Structures are given as structure tokens and as C-alpha cells.
Image (tube, one colour):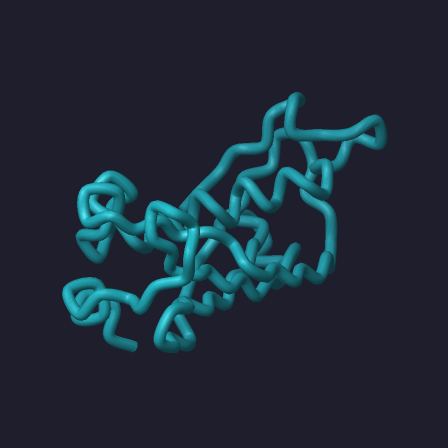
Length: 127
């Protein structure tokens, strides 16, 4: 997923505000899931929610106003109720690595209790 950096993405120092990378990572995971035929609305209809359980980011280099970044998402592990993603953000023009992240989602029922990932979803997410 590509994202152009706008002024509202930056902080007083003119670089992307650190928390905004969480939004970019979320958008990349959403794109990944939708490419597999798994949209948020489909999860809701099935009675499931997916929430971030754990998130670890390492900031390597800043992006600045006017840059275009490329965010990726790769599913690396799937347990009974969790999806683990390795994610990276690169500068499009230079390829420079900006952020590395590991994000774990947990499968939840509508009452927010953990639930096994349904077979239908597992089949679409085969690693």
C-alpha cells in the first residue's frame, strides 16, 4: 500500500509523527485481508472482530512531508485465535527502511471473548 505524506502527518520537527505509522500499518493489513477476500464487514457478518493484541515497532529512519511510503503486511503465523503479521514501511523513492513492526491480532466474538479463527477464514489465509 502506498501512502503520500501530507503536512497533517508530520510533527513540529517536520517528520511523520510516530503514532501515525500505526494507522499506515492498519491500512496495509486491511488491504492484505481484502486481497484475500476478507473484509471487515464480512468478519462482522460472521460474528467476529479482530483487535490488535500486541504491537512492536522499531523506527529506523524518518519520513517527511511530501515523501511517499510503501507499507506491506505479511502473515507469518496463525494460531488457534491469533494472526501474527510482520510489517515494514519503506520510502518509495529510495527504498530506505523506515519502520519494522510485528503486530498480533486476536479473534474475538461480539462479546469480546477470544474465539477460534473459523475454518473459512483459515482457508483464505493459508501461510
